[in-house]
Structure formats: structure tokens, C-alpha cells
Length: 362
Image (cartoon, rainbow, N blue to C red; front, top):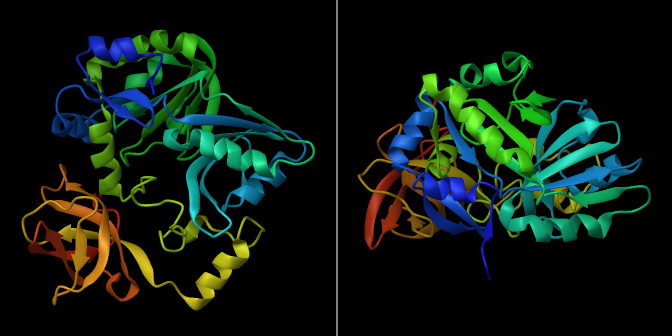
């Protein structure tokens, strides 16, 4: 199958990016080095092209009803200009996808979903659409730039009259940006270092990208690839779909109880309520390496006697902290911070300790 390209594909190639297949797209994994790009976002400002993400419009008098049914969080609390992190559950209580819900107007929402799940999510949501609700998949019309890091406000402010320092976390404003009208400027991101996500029509993508780099030059702005995006999100303990959550993991097992609201009905709410009452047998837990070594996805987690207690779902050498960190599902009795566990690294058992998230305290 031929890989899809974002509107800025040629730009990334010209910048010398190493391009790799990711979620059906040809995407930039790095421009210089993962370490350097990670540091740029933690200390300065960097730009990710994440235009591979999916966007669905949900409109109509029964739009709220549909979203309430398919997502676990409660959107009745959302005001226009607010966004909400949520997930969709299947009928067995596993996670179809995690997503962000934007309330654009009364009876108008935008759902932002993972690139690898666009078709699956579209089919899933469509299955439950009833009555006065219109769905539109606009994934191929929009580009999405994540401008992340502590210097993001200064780097971008000259491009818009919207007061960027007044956009709170998980709030957004629709405004003119770099001369382009109706850009969604969202105080969201996947790095834990602040910044914005910009939803731009494809035809304006190259213009906006160039303007961002002109405006941010004085702040040392750089393009950032998916390699650094992964280490940044892992330092915060943010879940990656396909690694840490999937169709077989429940939100309660994944420590996503905080976005699972039993005050309303949603797909398999009853089953999850029962799971909560009966207690879970495993839980997604974060750990740091005590012994030197890097945990990798799929490595087995064991107890002191070498008995299997779980598996690593995400792991890396933390660029900010200088030691190995990871997440994985472990038996409930091993999920408490302070628990000593071992990572089986190709037959060698390396000691680790279960810790509280986030790993990185900015």
C-alpha cells in the first residue's frame, strides 16, 4: 500500500529529515538527533508536523448525545472554546481509541483521533449515529502543527492578535494566524512543556509553516520529529495507542479512571462499573530503572524470583533524566509506587522501581 504524505512532505525532505512509515503516512522521525530535538522542546520551542492525525466534525441537535454515548468523559460540562481528553470504549470495555473533543459551537464538535485509527474510529462512531446528527471526516483537509516548549508564546505571538498567554490548558480560540482566518489555536500538546496545536487548511500549510519559522528564529525554533515526540510523551507518562492502550485494555486498567464518568451512559459503562466494583487484576504502571539498562516494548517484567508479573508497553532512555524509564501492565499487587520489579533484558534481570507519574517534573 502506498504511504500517504502530509502537505509538508517535500518541505521535510528538503530539511533533511529521515522519513519513516508511521500509521500509513511517510513521516519525519528526526531532523538532527532525537536527543537534540528533545532538549529543544524542553528548553526552547520546536514544531512537529502531526498532520497525520484524524479530525471528524460532529454536528446537529443530537451531536452531544452521540459523543456522550461513544466517549467515556462527560462533554455536557464543555463550554464553547474548551477541549477535553477522552477515550472510546468497545462493547467489551477495551479502548477503541483515545481522542480530544473540541466544542466549536452549540451542536458542533470536532473529534481529533489517532492517525492509525482513522478508518476504524469513523466506522465505530458512524455505527451509533442516530437522528439529527451529521458526521464529516475532514482528516484530509487539515494540517496540524504542534508548536511546543516554554518559548512557544514568544515565538508565535507576532503572528496573531489572539492573546496567546490567555489561552488556558485545554482551551482554544479560533482566530487569524499568519494571515490565515479561522485557525484553531489550541492550548494542547503531547509533550508536557506547554505550547499550542494549530489546525490549518492544507492549502495554507506551507505558508503557515514558513511564517512560524520566520517568527520563531530569534527563539531558536527547530523542526522536531516523531522520535523526540515519543520520548517527550513518555517522560510525562502519556499513553500511546497501540503500545499502552488498545482494544484489550480497559480505561480503569490504564489509569484513565479520571476520564471515565459513570454519571452518564456510554458504551459498556455497566461492564466497567462492575470492573471498578470487583477490582482490577492488572494496572498500567510507571517504573524507573535502578540498574543500568533500557526497557523496550515487549520485555517481560518479573518479580524477585523471576516469576512473570507483566510486560513493558513503552520504554526508553529518558533524555531529561539520564536513566531508563518505562510503563507496563503489572499484576495489581506490584502496581504501588516503591514496588521493586525486574525487567528481563534478553535474559538479564535488571532492577527497577515503580514510581508515580510524571517522570519529568518541568
